[in-house]
Image (cartoon, rainbow, N blue to C red; front, side, top):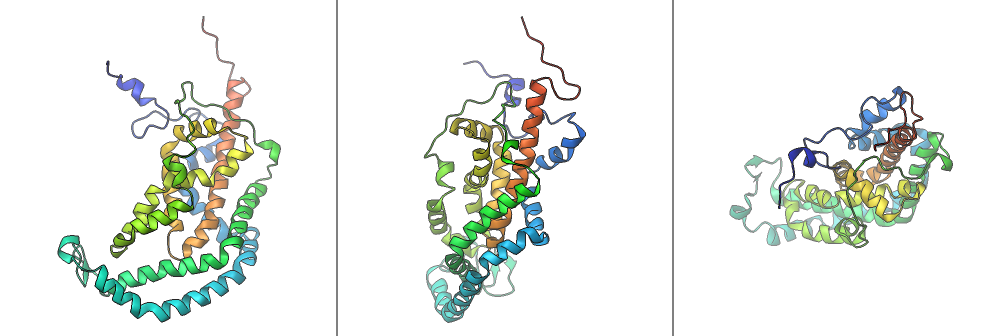
Length: 316
């Protein structure tokens, strides 16, 4: 079989490294330049979403009002649990997890040769407890925080002054889009649901003894599924078909991976991850708004209506 020329391989949508600029990202109108700049690094929406949540009263006041009672109850139970079981859990860590320091590169006072402010069993126990504290608080918050997330997304879109008619049907941006079939039970779909939380938590237990190793790996496995889940309202607003969604994500797979990794990593941080689970919806809404602005521009260019753009010539 003949090898594919490098020039052909480079223009594949969604390719990572060395690919040309995504269509319609150069020579864009002034109104689209800031959005185009933000879309060059999708994880930035995670930071911007968090900043907006903690600084915008229209976002943080409704979220706190919805969650404060459940949070206070959950925090009280979690603190009692942590104080009452600390010694028992530390003994469990010493007996069952800290068994082979020569094999794992761990010791009682250092991790991979890096000195620790306290011994390894204490660190691992605190890490386990922080995850348990988050789980207990989430148990008391589960219903209300889900409502707070949905409202945060909707309020972010509403703050842009856009109605339901602003979201237009999907417009293909590539001349030769990748051929992708929607798989309902694909790995990405499974890793975005509750099954993924259980499986990854069980698989990463041994790695919790190494600082942040379990969190980082779990976030990577859930990256694409998390990003897809966060943009479900966007796909619904555009009335996209499953195949269109699959193609749209494939064309931007490294954008979605990086965004989803940052989102999943932030949400897995103990306790503060609950805040990120709300602010990530804000970041996802802001990214969706920018993506839709580019979709409008692409549609205008293809119709010959964009400033300075004429209809594409027909080839004989």
